[in-house]
Amino acid sequence: MRKGRCYPSLINKMLSIGIIGLPNVGKSTLFNALIKGRKAEAKNYPFCTIEPNVGMVEVPDERLSKIASISNSKKIIPTAIEFVDIAGLVAGASKGAGLGNKFLSHIREVDAIVQVVRLFEDKDIHHVSGRIDMKDDIEIINTELILADLDTIEKRLSQTKRTAKNTSDKEAKIELSLLEKFKEALENGKLTRTIDITPEGEKVANGLHLLTRKPMIFAVNCDEENLSKEISFKGIGEEDDIFIKISAKLEQELIDLSDKEAKEYLNELGIGQTGLDKLITASYKILDLITFITSGEPETRAWTIKKNTTAQFAAGAIHTDFIKGFIKAEVADYKDFIEYNGWVGLKEKGKVRLEGKEYIVQDGDICFFHVKT
Image 1 (spheres, rainbow, N blue to C red):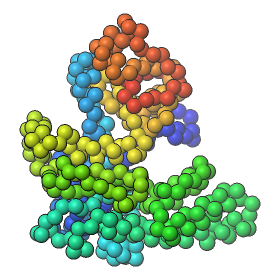
Image 2 (image 1 turned 120 degrees about the vertical axis):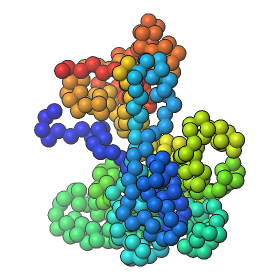
Image 3 (image 1 turned 180 degrees about the vertical axis):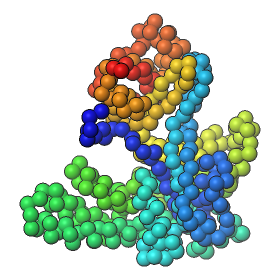
Image 4 (image 1 turned 90 degrees about the horizontal axis):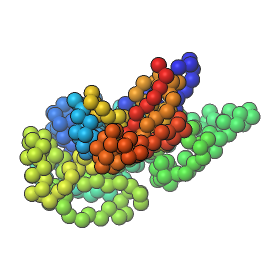
């Protein structure tokens, strides 16, 4: 690889999802269930979590076991995503209340957010507002994120105004226009992720590390009864927000069960898929990630890349040297791989495609890369 060359399609670090919410909404209980352990404390008092807890979580993918069975793979390696359990936030955090700036700084470091919202009733677990109100809880947190971003924008504006006024710097003028647009939106209570901007503006926005620009999912923590009920989220959050119902308490109870027992228990409750699986999959998707797969006798493995990544750069997810040495890729569709019983059957039926470096890899593609060594 030539020194200084940038490969933007590669994911150079583990992407992370921050779990946030008001105190006592079930964040740490959810986190414990996610990592299938008890690394994070889950106690009934505010600010139980002070320093963030971090856990690696495998992304569920039922395709892998089917592929591995056909390839007689000795092991299966799924892709993973990082979840971070961040301290509970309270009204006034942007001005230092609770853990204030420390809380907000931890959010800046993650790539996306899961906001846990409480819907369960429990007289033994105090709600900081004294009542259960999803809309109000979301507004409290969003307001704090908005106020923190306004502070960031206003500090940046004064400097950018001087630069744009005193020079012909085109980038400064683009930045000034974007900052003013964001400032107006935030002052009107809008999250900056709802604002459409140009590709040039996107580059500037990425450098601002705004909290309200991060992709967000709402995990609605409810009791078992509400899991099977239809719940309307109309009028709560933004129109295209993703809401996933989940019972953190139930999910943690499933930890001690075998896969078979857990499946039987879920079937008894009339639940086909765990809330955790839905949450993990949705978290993966809001980061615009997809999976391609390599498979043979040694292993069947899932690899993470961004959407719209070419075959050449997808090969770089395996090893960066593969980018420079890329020759071609043998690509098979997952369904064809299953139907024709692996690579041998695929080749007999002419179902293996030879793709060049500009091919856009699709989610579920099974790939074999030819590279110069």
